[in-house]
Amino acid sequence: MKEDNYILFEKYLSNELTTEELDYFDLELSTNTYFKQEFEIYKSLNESLSSKFENEENETELRSTLTNLGKEFIKEEKKGKVISIKRLRPLMVAASIALLVGFFLFNNGNPVYSDFAKHNNLELVVRSENNSAISKAEEAFNTKNYKTAFAQLTVLESEFPNDIEIQLHKGICLLELDKYSQAETIFTNISNGTSAFKNKATWYKALTYLKQEQFENCSNTLQTIPKSADEYELAQKLLKKL
Image 1 (spheres, one colour):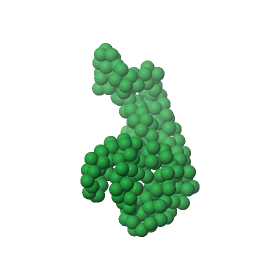
Image 2 (cartoon, helix red, strand yellow):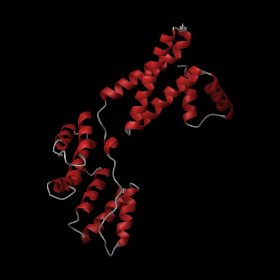
Image 3 (cartoon, rainbow, N blue to C red):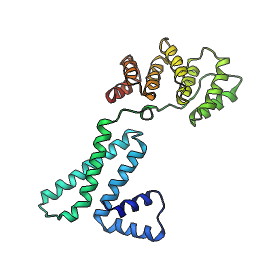
Image 4 (cartoon, rainbow, N blue to C red):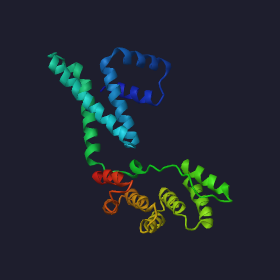
């Protein structure tokens, strides 16, 4: 991949191209097959790496890019075309970079907390005279303002000290605020109980270990989640990545 193209791709993705550069870029993209292939590879890698595989779609997209790239070489070979090294070089360089980065990410990376920390929206079932606290807690939690959510949930807990749902979401807030010890205590207490939130609390206890990169503790905790639990499939998925 030419250094000039690399700079051009980066400026395009950062919306930093001048009008003249953008005109040139659009022209190359529509008329130069190799330029377009290089850009698609660079764009795919850039998106996948910057998000750190925030979800499976990013990983699948990168895998698809690498697979399709390989098919292009096979297709040309089957057609019996004679392609000069000069014409193939940009694509081969890009392919090498993609394959090396892809191999490293797919085979050497441990799972990260952000890959699995997908919280459902908070919709409390309790009814209180303090409806303001309920609304504020839900809005703050659902917009990821965990400090405010924790404060409002604490207000509600004083009125409903035995409400497990409130306790669980306080634990999630603490986890997001990196208050690991306090979060773990809450999750452990709930998981040792018999409420409907027992297995969900175990899952979040495992995530508490994952966020701290305590992979052995995370694995041991995940293995206690029963097959009947809604969280079982997620637990198995995470176990395979540990």
